[in-house]
Image 1: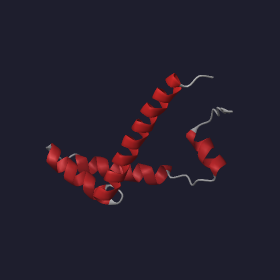
Image 2: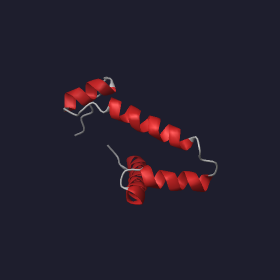
Image 3: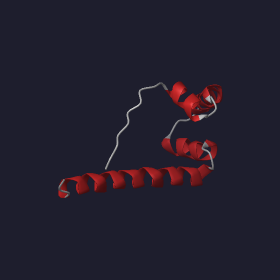
Image 4: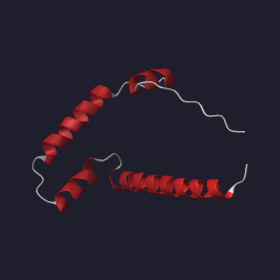
Length: 88
């Protein structure tokens, strides 16, 4: 049996409901700092170097995120393939 629940709320409402802190101000500061730093970047190599330095956990964080995205895409593909072969 599957049960699907759809909740329509804003990100702020979701954070409050789940008890997560509001990180809006921290995010604004982070985005502002990255934007200022990126103004001096002239080529892709410098951009990659800078991104690896400022990203949380550096290269390890970027690799973990890449693996997460690739795993989610693979799971999505295998889930869609499984739906077609199952009979109700």
